[in-house]
Amino acid sequence: MNDFRLIVGRTGGPEVIEREEIDAAALTPDPGEARIRHGAVGLNFIDTYQRSGLYPTALPSGLGAEAAGVVEAVGPGVVDVAAGDRVAYGTGPLGAYATVRVMPAKHLVPLPDHVADETAAAAMLKGMTACYLIEECAKARRGQGVLVHAAAGGMGSILVPWLARIGAVVIAHAGTAEKADRARAAGAHHVLCCAMGDLAAQVRGLTDGLGVAVVLDGVGAASWDASLASLSRMGLLVTYGNASGPVPPFKALDLMNAGSVYVTRPTLAHYGATAEQRRRLAGRVFEVMGEGVAFPIGQRFPLGDAAAAHRALEARKTHGATVLTI
Image (cartoon, rainbow, N blue to C red; front, side):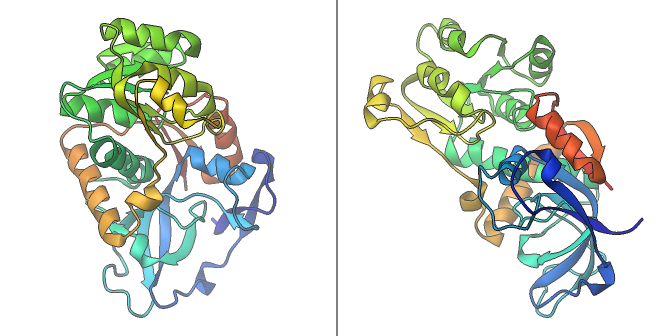
């Protein structure tokens, strides 16, 4: 197989993704860099934001920030990884949609022998995101009510069992009956499959009218009003994604009227800004894997068919994680 990478020279739909042949032998790592032969690549909703231009990037640009594979070579000064090491990453830089690439070695984390490349590619970005959302941002705890949107999606399918494991009362919201069943099987205590306009009333019906302490919302625009209305007094809305578009402008008074609630828009780029933070988050991901939290792969696409994978993701035709195979 010839080595290649996928790039975008202009923003737009999945059709703007282009294939570019590359010569792996010419990819010589500079100081602080490593050359990685990918075994699997992760697909995430943020990839569609960068492709479409919602999140601007300098063009032409690579795509993807998550993959796993083997180190082929390292540049001068690299001491944390060596040729032959299995590694994974979930914080970029962009360019993971490739059979082989050179990247800063500081983004790499060692991959335990028991974690397969596909599992790591499915779990690194989403797993580290779930870790900081639950344990560092929301600080969710036993007995606390937490509403999870898109509960059977790539992020939701990790958030639900992780929250259930720590003893939070998980209320899962899913778009179809099939996805609701998946969320229930993942450990959700209550599963709702209703229109956004009806969601807050149903959440309050499950919580004696109080609402939930935390909402984890990766949907964005379409769920904003429902999320605010589902919160208890002084609750926390964590809006971490824009699957339906960015959250609309709002006033500080909206937060007071919702019950003196809090809103945050976090990103892994901040919670995993340093190599130490990234390794700590990844370590927790591997730890909860060992404790039985599943990181399900719902579908696989060949790397060369990434455009089809983007179409499926944006059409809500996926469940769990999506992996691009090589």
